[in-house]
Amino acid sequence: MEDSVMAEQTTKREDSISWDAYFMSVAILSSLRSKDPNTQVGACIVNEGNRIVGIGYNGFPAGCHDDELPWGREGNYLDTKYPYVCHAEINAILNSDLGRMSNCRMFVNLFPCNECAKMIIQAGIKRIIYINDKYPDDEKFIASRRMFKLAGVQMIKMSVPDQKIEIDFSRFL
Image (tube, rainbow, N blue to C red; front, side):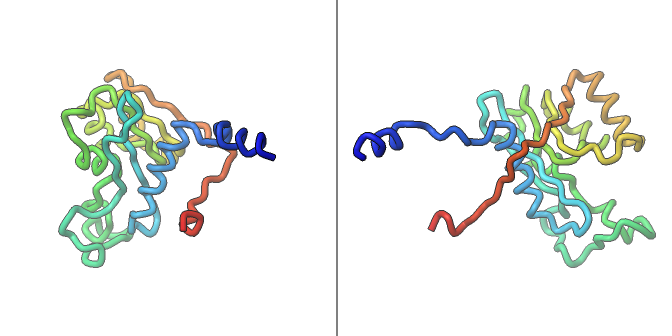
């Protein structure tokens, strides 16, 4: 009995998640903060030492209350969310130390649009790891790919792990 207890204390867990799954999970968890009723996007920026240096989600700018601007996708442009929402990628960059983005990688659950691509390139991020490429034929995303290729930014579609990751707060009580 004593030997088995000792083995349990000195043997590492074999079912821990990979770095990529961990950082994508942080991006997805961040997306849950979004108030957008249709599209929740999260982004997590990671440096070469596997340290998180920025996170963000899509939402209205600071000081613009979530109930005072529209969340719709159709109709008059000014009555939709589009002129007002800050994308997750931009928020992650702005929530970071801008001087430390060089050679970082960004984990994001939705492939970045052209406006985000410009910011990502300017920030010095060198790899985009994404899960969903929802709009591959939309000109904004074609432009993103073109700019990423020209700037040498790698675009990596992440294989989603088979495992389900759940957060059970009661487990830690």
